[in-house]
Length: 197
Image (tube, rainbow, N blue to C red):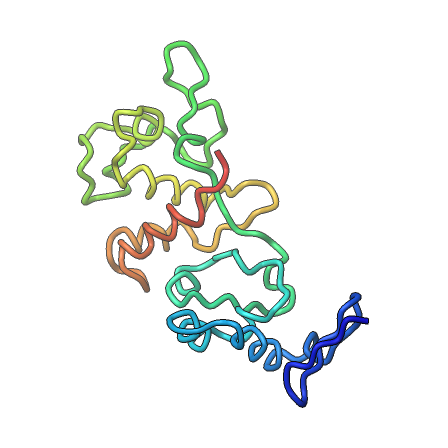
């Protein structure tokens, strides 16, 4: 048996044997921090214990703007039962027919609605439809694509996934009347929700 003594109260055993450290988050944190120094130690000290020493398989999942902002990876039992996510703008913009006027996927709302009817402050042309925005690479750099993507995902996330905000909450974030700023919400949608291509 390979046996090392870390301190008088924490013994680490080799050969896959159980250890008091394995069941005590504070001891695991102390053990983790014993091998780091400088900025890494400060970061570890500021992080929640469960983020460093937990065994959750959900530690990379961000299902809310609040979670993204706090970087809190502490999860309660059952909290990650349903993964969160959505489709990408390109997924919603795939075309079906030769004249490219119909979506290849079923949309939860009318794809011919004008973008400006939902996103009043949009910089896109007045007569641009939702599907034209999503399906034309000319608009790929427009933030409105991600907003419409989030809006569509809020109605119809991928099977087995949940989308954390309602259609009205997505529009509220865009119009600056939600709980978070438009830039915070947009960053969250782009970074954490557009998973399925």
